[in-house]
Each structure stands twice: as structure tokens, then as C-alpha cells.
Amino acid sequence: MNFSAGDNMFGGWSTPGQLMSFLVYRCTGSTKAGASIKPSNSEFNSTEGHLAPDKTWEQMPLYSSAAEMFGNGFNPGKNPIWLHGDFYANNKTTGDLCWFELYPGSDTYATSPEGGQERVATVNGDGDWYFATEPFTVHPARPNNLTVTWKSSGPKPDLFKNHTEAYWADFYSQFPSLKQSASSGPGKESGAYSAFLEGPGWIGCFAAVLAIAL
Image 1 (tube, rainbow, N blue to C red):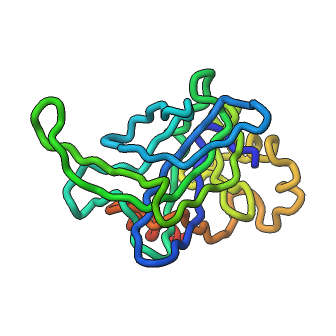
Image 2: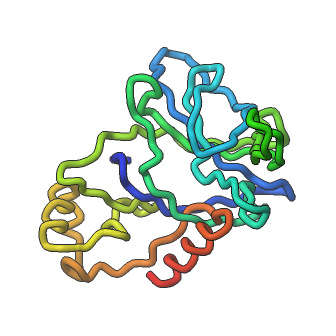
């Protein structure tokens, strides 16, 4: 898909069994033929990304260090959520070929180097199951800071943008085929934006409310 930095995503997943799932975002700059990307066994204690031993860049974008009510794991079964693209990294270090992964894992507290308690989310790439999406290229931000919302049916107007005439002009300049197929006219697009993962804590609730409202 023609995904650009700053875009949003709606979607979802459904996990089997009774294990909680943990979301990880990874990127690579390697285009070496036959190169394989293996599942990760990593620890995350913030939303900051880091380089894995295989030189892929990995991040837990929905990481939460808050109280237990905002856990980092997702309950088994169907999970919807909204993701914003600001966390994407596409540069010479991390690469711009990116994908999402789901793992079983654990969410615990440990003593930080400063002596305090920090939350540590650990993913188990050698656990009972592991899922990965198809890799996609993260393009640089579009002209005029145009951003869109992606779902399974393709690009839609950005959920949080003011849809002015200038916005619609930029939107249709990027996606001209949508102008031909639009039936409700600028500013009147209907649509239920589906959600992408049942987020931890308030993020998931916020996503659910938005999906219902739209």
C-alpha cells in the first residue's frame, strides 16, 4: 500500500488459544536476496525503538508504563485499534521496509538502573505462536503534510484532519481514482472506520468509541 509517514491505520486481529498477544513493529534496510527475518525475543521498557541483534529496528508502539490497568498485552480473541503513523522510522539506519508482528509474551516489573521500578514487556519469538503481516514500504511524508487513514478497503480521509477544500484537493491529487468513485461528494464521505487491534487501556476504548461514532 502507498503508506506514508504520519498516516493512520485501522484494522484488527484475532488470536487463538488463551495466550495474550503483544504487538511489535519492525523495520529493515536489508534488501539482500534470501535474507530471512526471524522472530524476536526482546524486552521493551518504553516506546523507544532499538536495534535487534539481526539489525532490524523494533518497537512496541503501544507500550504503556502506567498502572496495571494499562497492560501491554492484548486479550485472546478479536482486538480492534487505531494506530497513528508518527512512530514509524524510515531512515538509513532502520530502513523503510516495515511490518507488524504478534507474539505471546509477558508483562512484569523490574528494578531499573536508577533503582526504581520499571515495566518490562517481553516477547517470546520461540513461544507457542508468532504472526507477521506482509512487509510494506513506509514512504516519506506527503506534500502539504497530507495524511490519510488506511483500512482494508484502502485510503480514506484522515480522521483527525479538518476536511477543507484544500485538503480534498490534496487528497484527490494523491488518489485520483477515489474522486471518480466518490458518490457522496467532498466533506460528506460516510464510512465506518474499522479499528486495528483492541488497544491497552484508554487507547483501545478511544478507538472503539471512534469506530462506533463513525
